[in-house]
Amino acid sequence: MGNCWPTPQQVLLLRAAVSAPSQALAAWREWMTVVDVENDRIDVGSYRLLPMVYTNLRRHMPDEPRLKMLQGLHRRTWYENQMRFRACRAMFETFAGSGIDMLLLKGYPLAAQYYRDLGARPMADIDVLVPRQRAMDAIRLLAAHGWISTCFGARGVDDDMLDVKASHGFTDGRGGEIDLHWHVLQATLDERVDAEFRDGSVPLQVRDLHFRTLNPGDLLLHVCTHGLVCNDVSPIRWVADAMAILRQAPSIDWGRLVRIASLSNTTLQAQAAFTYLRETFDADVPAWVADELARIPVSTVRRRLHAVQLSPGILGGVHADWYRYHADVADRKPGYSARSPLAFLRYLRVLQGKDGLWQVLTWGGSRLVYRLSSSVRDALRRRLPFPSGRFDSTQE
Figure 1 (tube, one colour):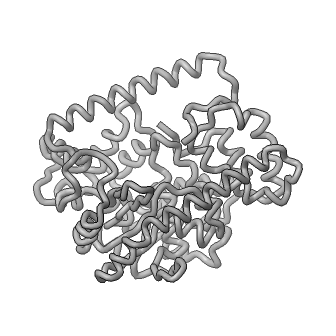
Figure 2: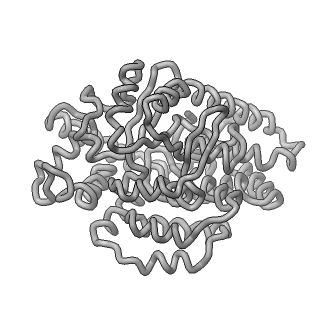
């Protein structure tokens, strides 16, 4: 499972993507001494950084023999991002025509406003937030226009699922993918928090369409909260996203960020992320921010959830789901109970879109086998004399 903290090789590549030209060029050259970019299998998290490296260094390494390859990745990213938005445009117009307010989240606003280059920041889908009370209206409109769920079983998305998830993916089968959010954060299924994000939102125009998006501080908190969760694909891109915001945003209301982190129970993630960015990338984050975040009380279950999200262990995501269930669902949502194992299984069934408890157990068993086999494979790789530049995952 990809670590949210970059490896030493990934740190070099991140420096090449986000540092000032002289430091970035030195980091790129050092990275190239341990990685054969044309023949080694590069992990997906690192591969996604290569267009950013190109935009940062293209004017400073004209003699780099692999510049054409990086340029090709940048052009492909630009084309794919343009086509993704074009594929989703008609649905966004339909939402607007039905009076559904929308906020664009994550990838597209980051690419347009902070990287300022749609070729620099790869994205798999377009993330859009709608009000919780209009989520089912949006889902029905998606279904009416031929969009289907991208994952899990045949249950589809219903009111039960809206109670335990923050978002769900949909595809039109022709290249369009929308990650429909009804909460900004998976860590906090609280409409009061969403209202705070909406109240602080700023305009964003995409061609002739008018949206809103998170202000720089709120987006920075979202990036760090989303990034500090281990994933099958290493989520290290959060570092580059955070550095882009910090460098391009005219200002950040740090007091508001601390208040929103406290309200949304994300102080641990924010504190860890800002400390890492300051210490590793010399990020311009005031020192008092991490100190203030550290003083905010955090429940035991939230601390355990944070620890498991950083290092899931053999149980993987199910372990995190257990603590997330206790932190944000049990005793707050009708039909769930912190003391009932069957209620937790029901939560997993709804969360994963399964049709019955037997499917939940089968899914849990398959995930356990996958985690065990991955752990054994990683242990063997640490013992075998692979080249230092050989990474774990194939390109995607």
